[in-house]
Length: 335
Image 1 (cartoon, rainbow, N blue to C red):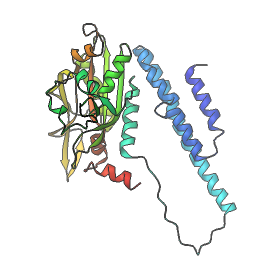
Image 2 (image 1 turned 90 degrees about the vertical axis):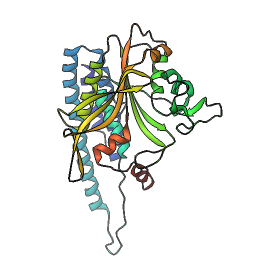
Image 3 (image 1 turned 120 degrees about the vertical axis):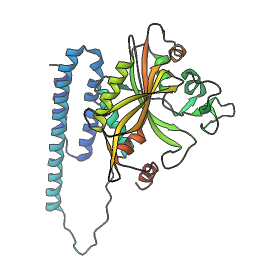
Image 4 (image 1 turned 90 degrees about the horizontal axis):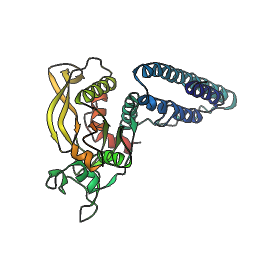
């Protein structure tokens, strides 16, 4: 029996024992969550050649769709049983006023993080994490950021010590450094997480969310970077043949560097992503600077790679039509 068949058999056996919604949600997380059995199988795709990947992804997506369908059917069955039980067991006093009820929902930022992680896991990326409190070395120096770079100034960075050696990370790029320092190439990771900067207005917040991507191997080129980002943008916005362009830019940790823009148009005061005569910047990227590889003890003559970074909150605003970043914090305070 193959590993995929074992996963499917294991799921069916556990599903038959489920009696409550809570147990059903736990089962879903166990198989489809960030570290679930099915998600972990997607992460193994980087080990296969092109033909094996195609066959493996078809089988894995069939199991994923089957699990989702069975979970949906089981939920309906549980809800039906709950209603029948209430009808038989409960007596309702119709003179009592109706009690107000609020149903919790997944926060848009958490939902977008799950969506992005799922998309990249399907092309072989694993999720890496790092601490919010970082060293100045990992946050700036190892990433080839000069001593006089404006990003190091107090007005931009939350320093936790007078000597500026400890700080709240200003981006998730330090996860790249930590990943490369503790392992050996190839690397293929994404790193979502919280970041902090001294800024607050309609489109900026002191705490926000970023996602960093890194792929280091032999013979990696800008063509690989463009193909990766084109695939992600199409999948995330659910638009095929989306207009995308690379615009030259500069970042200390990549060379060459680029900003990625996508096409859009405005109709009736609404933004339509995908085409049009206007361009919207959504992320920055480039080839990993040789100095960053050297600072992480990687042979820059043997390996090269690309990196990209994007604001998760910004992507959530674009996809779900949210026009004020501070709404995310209001969603949390309102429960």
